[in-house]
Each structure stands twice: as C-alpha cells, then as structure tokens.
Image (cartoon, rainbow, N blue to C red):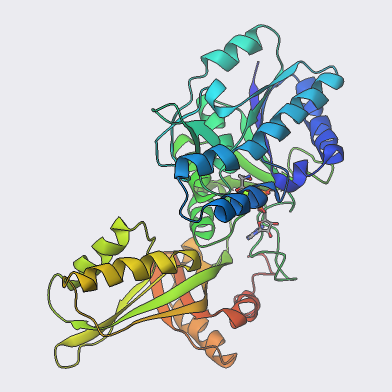
Length: 412
Ligand code: ADP
Ligand code: ASP
Ligand code: MG
C-alpha cells in the first residue's frame, strides 16, 4: 500500500481534544488506502518545560541526560495518539525512536540521523497495522543512548521517514496554514505561498523562520521528498497549504520571496588584535572548540597594525564565547584589549532566488532601514540572501517595512 507521512507539531497535539482531531485526519487518509506513519511532537510548551528543569538542576549539564529528559515529551503524545486511533478502530501502535530504530550520530542535543531501517515497521504493516505512530525528535546513538535532533527536530524525523519509506508525501501539520512571505504573527500583511522553492525555504529556515527545521528542508531537497506544510485546524483538500518544491515547478515569483528574522542574536567585538596572518584563525578556532556557532563576521580596517574583529552568535552562547576568548588571552596565545558583548541585537534577512539575476536589492533594503531610522551593525550576503544585524527593539518594524517595500503582499 502507498505510504503517507503526517507530522503533527506541538500545538496540534496540545491536549486530548486536539489529539482526537489529528487522529481523525489520520483516519481519513487510512480510509483512502494509505499506510500512515504519524510523527508527533510533544504537547506545546512541554519541551520548554523539560529544558527548563534540566537547566535548573544542572546548568553545565551532561548532554546525554539532557536528551534523556527532553525527548520524553514525545513519548507521551505517541502513546496517546496510538490509543486514540485504536479507539477509532484503526490498527495502530506507538514507536519510540530506539524501537524503530532511528539511528543517529552521538552529537547529543543536535544529533544527525544516519539510518532508519524500515524492516520492523514494514513487518507490522504486513501484519495489518495501518498506522505507525513515531515519537519525533529522538533517536539512538551508536553507544545505545537516547539522542535528540535539535529544537524543532520532529520536522526532520518526518522527512527522514518519508525518504526511508518512499512515502508519496510528507505533510507537516502545524498552527499556520502554510509558509508565508514572513512570520504572520509579526506582520499582518504576510501572504501565504502556494509553492516555495527548496533553496528559498532552506535559507528562510536557517535564517530563523521556524515553520520548518533547516535540516528537514535539506533532507527533502536531497531525497526529493514531496513536502507540504498545512494547518491541522482546518478541513483540508489535497491542494491545501504550501508545497516546498523545485524552483522549476514555480512559474512566477518575486525577486524577494520572504523576510526572516532571528530574535536572540548577540554581537561580540574583540578589540584591538594584531592585524597579521593567523589571528582570525586563532580566534575562531577557540570559539569553534568551545561549541560557539559563529554566524556573521566583520574585520575593521587596520589602524597602526591593530584591528577589531566583530562576530555574532546566539545570545545563550555569549558566556561560552567570553570564557573561550578569556582562556586564550590568559594563556598568552591571543592579545586583545577588551571583549565587548551586545546582547540586544536581532538579525533580519531578505531571501529570494530572483536576486541571482537582479541587482539593487541590497541598496533598496539599506534605504528602507535608513528611512525608518534603523542603524545597521553588521551585513552579510550570499547569492540569494542579504542579512543585517540591528537593535532588537527595531526588529518587527524592520520586518514590516521590508515586507511593504518589496511588496510581498502582492503575488508576482
Ligand atoms: P510546530 O509546533 O507545529 O512545529 P512551530 O512553532 O515550530 O510549529 O512553527 C510554526 C510557527 O512558525 C508559526 O506559528 C509561525 O509563527 C512561525 N513562522 C515563522 N516564519 C514563518 C513563515 N515564513 N511562514 C509561516 N510560519 C512562520
Ligand atoms: N518538541 C521538540 C521541540 O519543541 C521537537 C519538535 O517539536 O519538533 O523542539
Ligand atoms: Mg516546529
């Protein structure tokens, strides 16, 4: 029988009533003749609560125990979903990651999926099971420990299952009815897209649009998974939501496809380092060994052989960055004056494959921000995106102004 993957996010399984509603959607697809793999998230807010408990117990936690704790929310919803389906007379059972087994690397808290052998689940489909309810976000390491796939990781579980079982489609049910030109929660004029190209979705996700985890888009692109985002709160047709697809399948598109933001950024400046070969390598090796995810980097012009090096990273990694740079300074390996940290910045980006062939997008973006009196602190660009770091208090204003200026409320 053809296989369908259906993933329900936290708000879609937030209570028993919502689980019943999601189970009904699954029942509709089973009645159409599909064998269904349902991937569930934890009830909304649950994972945050679990992370909070770990941080409170031990701020310098053992990541293996972090994973043991934070993966547990999904176990509850998987069992409840299977019970609900059984009550509807749909043959179903739950699977935790290790039972499948969903094999991952041992990079605890941000493990990558290595393999999903389909035999165990297929054997049960062969015996008449119609729905495998799988706990999202979790897997098992080569050492036999529970791992998790990074926040938002159930999206990646879903796409990986769709690839491993050659599913006809991977439907991501969430609390919005598709992918929008920007987050509809901060911009009233955001417009739902019927289709979006993989590359644009990949950039939007990696620049902060949390509607899909970045890695899920990467996998869908690599394994040609038909990926759709749609609402679990509305009656759905086969054309509902947003299809993430190859750029060739999209007839017309705007130069800028969307605006993304990332709220919790910090800007750090290493003041007055020697301007000579090897200094950048030294700073960024120390940061990478400390597990700091450096994003944007700028080096100032040199003055009397010394320069400033500025970079950005997530706010919650500032302490780690400070510790790492202080340590190399104390060892005499790197000499700098001060390390300045600005924790009140946000990143705003415009994304679009049309930028490859059209110039002037950067100039327009900077003009829009300057007209709003917003100062740009750092800029980075790639072929299909431009990102700026600005004061966090202007983030929503910047998103809305850019959305207006690039007329994203209007279809191409
Ligand atoms: P789930 O719990 O179902 O995985 P998430 O909260 O992870 O849901 O992702 C859905 C949220 O993503 C939406 O509620 C919305 O606020 C946010 N979002 C950010 N950017 C976008 C965008 N471009 N299009 C749609 N939603 C977006
Ligand atoms: N429950 C996990 C999280 O909140 C995984 C997910 O929902 O995708 O990050
Ligand atoms: Mg999510």
